[in-house]
Amino acid sequence: MNIRELQWSKAEKQAARKAFEAAYRKECAAVTATLKDMRGRACEPRDLWRICDYLTEQRDRTDEKYDYRYSVLPFVLARLLKEGWLAESDLEGLSADKIEIIRFLAGA
Amino acid sequence: MNIRELQWSKAEKQAARKAFEAAYRKECAAVTATLKDMRGRACEPRDLWRICDYLTEQRDRTDEKYDYRYSVLPFVLARLLKEGWLAESDLEGLSADKIEIIRFLAGA
Image 1 (cartoon, rainbow over the protein chains, first blue to last red):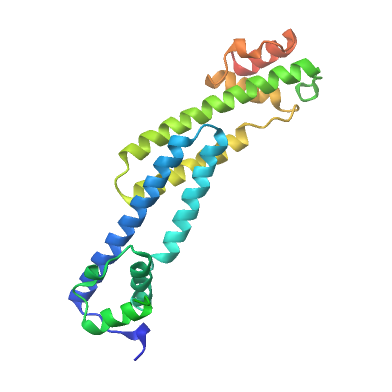
Image 2: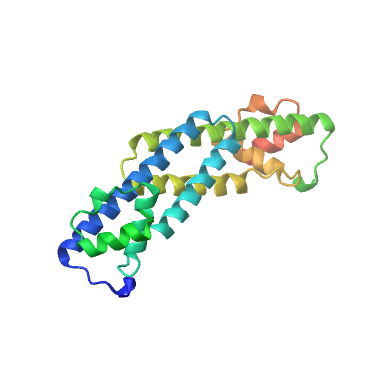
């Protein structure tokens, strides 16, 4: 079995998309909270540009991480699970073998 | 007289630096206020990246604008005066002829 060539049913695609987007929103909300905190402490112009650097890094980082191609989706979901942006319950709707693969990849 | 070749006394350099930095802080404070407003209205991840774009633009814009080389300083101070980041009273400490040049360049 090649993880990159798993077949995804329409229902699984919907469930995966939902989990993926929920994790993305959760991670962006964490960035927003940090932004609020940084802005609250910003006194100097350089603090403002530090916020700019921070946001640019976060955008680059999340753009790279949130890759929805089905060929890499098990790896992406595993990483989100490992990092706590997804709970196992968020994977509901995927087949048992896919959940097992994702849990295995996450080291869960 | 070549505006690019004006001579600046030590006292004038200090006065110019003070005015320049005050304007920069004022403009950065305005960016910070807009950032606060944007963050307050941010709901979606894309709003977060819009803030990132906004800050990047502001950094590029102010980096280009706040050029402290003495050869261009009269033009820079004139622009800041015209845009309201400086008041004429902020130019105190410069020679009368420099103030006249800056006012002329600002169209004041």
